Image (tube, rainbow, N blue to C red; front, side):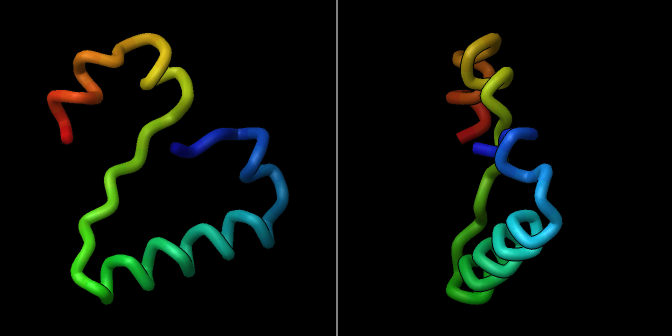
Length: 49
């Protein structure tokens, strides 16, 4: 889940991108959602999974 509060610091954003890139290299296909996605449209989020 992505949130604005977590990514306001540039280093946090870079660290998150490095983690995602490592997951992709290991064969994962990460899906990204915001809190508003999970809170406001949970059924659509589940359909995307």
